[in-house]
Picture 1 (cartoon, rainbow, N blue to C red):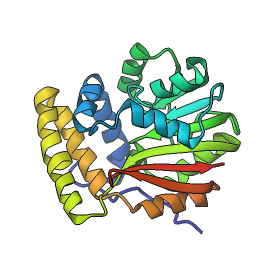
Picture 2 (picture 1 turned 135 degrees about the vertical axis):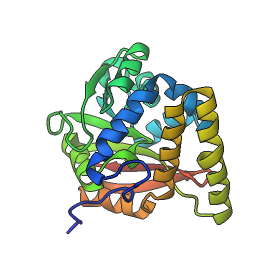
Picture 3 (picture 1 turned 180 degrees about the vertical axis):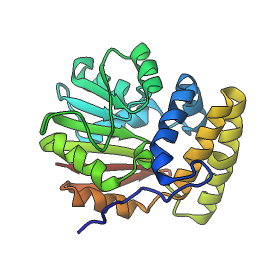
Picture 4 (picture 1 turned 30 degrees about the horizontal axis):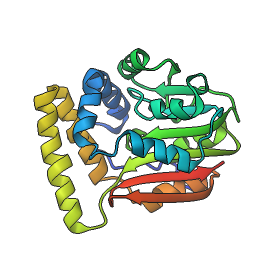
Length: 244
């Protein structure tokens, strides 16, 4: 049987003093940085922007006319590529951060809902496709998250989760630390705000301490997903895919 709780990373005491404070900390951090998030993203994206997100959506099986839920929609970076494929009327964005939803509402004409990835406020078997872009490290429990995803997908529905992971090469990991762990937080603080620097510090720590990709795939399978696979780009960008 799966562990009662499977966190994507351990307790990070430099950011919050108790595990139960994690959700409030993360929501507040994204609320504070929502207005600057697209600018920050352009700093750390390594050029894997719109073309990569749209390519992965298509590879995972998103087709015109399908109803899609984008979890942790943020400012809509994944959702806007989904709109180009399946149409704005078929895309729903969900996020825990009111600040992020406010920014997304200014940019995209899609339905937006505030909610928790671990308890999606949608009917069983109501979605054809579900995506999550670079936010899996911010959930509290992988088992609950993937079970919630599986519940709302129709039989045969597809899931795509985009993430950044530790590099398998030791040299690449050192370079990643220098860039994402040092340069990006500094530039984010200079180009955006002090909270943006703190967000990127947190972002790096969640990458550096994230569970191995095999654990994420196992959690997906435990939740009932089939044909689970993981595609890697540049040694660090991972696209997890599966079928309900």
